[in-house]
Length: 140
Length: 111
Image (cartoon, rainbow over the protein chains, first blue to last red):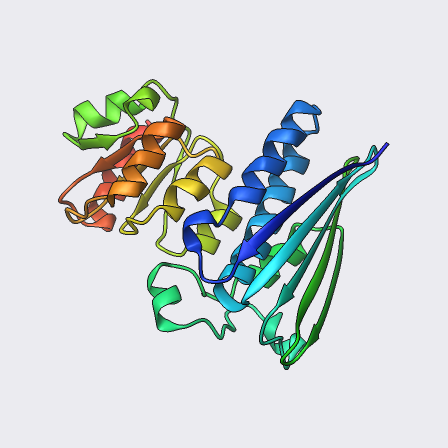
């Protein structure tokens, strides 16, 4: 059995950032998933959500939960990432000064996502958008 | 140690989230970078920061932070306080700088 959730993200709307993460967290708690696994999912998904809010125009989060894993796919329409290798580096960020002032945009997002996921895929096309696929296994 | 105990001992302002004053504190984390807190703070931590916007509570809730302490007299924004009341995560305040309040909290918590 697979549970499926879908959330829309509006670029620039920081007031809603974290909504999907908190909904997914609630569902995983109800399913009695190991708190350590939930923590990893929450960190990865929140960072991914914030990336879409901070950089893209809009995005969709799809979450699939089955007995083995939590799979999260974030597809955004946005500027895309021209150098993914560089974007994956700790401390590299293209965030605006306004976003940085809020304490975001420290260049830790993508490394945090990778660290907290078991499978991590990123595809991006400049001028089109970015797609992230994050998998966290339920049995660590 | 309960949140209410640090409020009393360090004479902290309670801006919102009174429902959570009975929460237990286990350690703390001092940072103004939200991804840093997201990646490294632990549940039950008290979070010391100068960030006052609503995303602080979103993170505090996701990370199960016991309470947020705003430094240097910074005050939370209205929607931050509303969210803190809803989540029952206290927002506290002090005129002290992060270094000083962190030191005092460290000594209280480790003791």
